[in-house]
Image 1 (tube, each protein chain N blue to C red):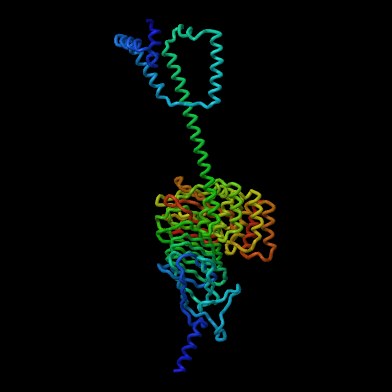
Image 2: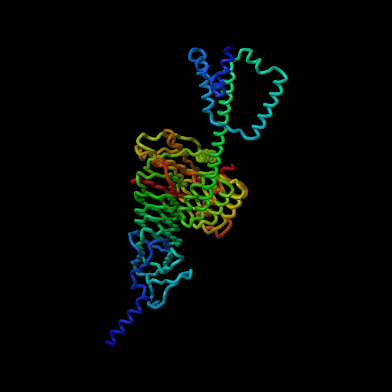
Length: 264
Length: 335
């Protein structure tokens, strides 16, 4: 028996394809042939590795594609050189087995990697869901009966990204909340967004409302920092209005004075 | 016999209509919200009990002719206790108290679990004292000074002219937000308090001995820069390293228009625990310690754009404590 034949027999043995007699023969040969035994051990390890691989089931489309490629390859090979020729060029059979194993390993790795990245995507999705839950809880807390709960919610707004819903509810808080501390906290949360037209509009309207001088003063400060025509006009209007509270008027004067200085 | 019966009846019926006679009013109320409206001289005290107990000292002045009549305020709320105040139930778990007659000094003992809201829009001088309260506290006043002692929070205070003094107990509960327009804010917190602090004074100084880790804020540095460019006083920037003894006490002050100083005078003062009293004057000051703190103080004479405003953490940070006085000083102490 040539070495090549022996190798084929070994593979068949490991796959359990030999008849009982052939098996007995091979086993006795193995006992006397250390080289063959070594080869057998190596093959056995490879087969073991193969057996340990987790089953990876490609999706149907991938399978179809693979089968198609396989068919094409088969057709191409029958037209040209048969596989056996390659073996005759000196590649031992275990090499092809090893190559297969490597391919399988790469495949498994890829599969695991794909699985891992899907996990990551799931994690990101879960995080996004969490943020949206946080937002919902926050929106709920903003309308809580207790002012301290509302304040805590408003304070935490600047820790998450503002979406439209939050911007609108913050404007609502500045307009309608019954507690001034909560209103001023919401005003602060809106500070980075003064260029948003909704925020800007709300500020311009609110600064003229006289119910809460302290709120008016904070609004004057914010508007004066924007230094645009509308804001300046809104502040000037407060000076003209004789009903403006004295301390609000002082603040408006200071703001206009400061804007003039900056413009020089 | 007949005569004494008549006298008895006269006294019996007269009592409810003579406010000067009444001294105490009790409400069986152990959880919910108590709203106190326009009460000028008010002293509140938390206790372990089941009823709100209101006592009055200093007689509400009632003319002889008012005997048998009850006073009414501008909102149409009628006095109903004989103490010069109206007590009304508003909803399931809320009581509203309105002071109808002036002059009386009221002491109210409230069960610990009750939340308190104090609203005082009056222009007169008055003081609101609150102690031993371990629940939500909301106070809004125009002129009234506010004095808190042994309270835990959450506390939300806003006032236009009132000074606020607050000594918290060991069990501080956030959020705490204390904002005064013209009054001083003087707060004592336990040294071990964990909190995120926001301190801000537009025209006053901030003094503290709490070990605050000031956070670098881009926004702050920007406004400080914007400030310097807008300033008319000669520019400049001084960096001061804090002493190893502890964090610097930060202060930024600019003269107020109402003061006699010239509007162009800009004075900044930085105090450190070691060099207390030494002053460094500069139009714009930044304190940059061992990357631990960064404080920007800036101002232009009478028109401050962005004065002292710092954020920081104490003992690693926690819930938010905001202290603010636009025109006066902030004192933040540890005990």
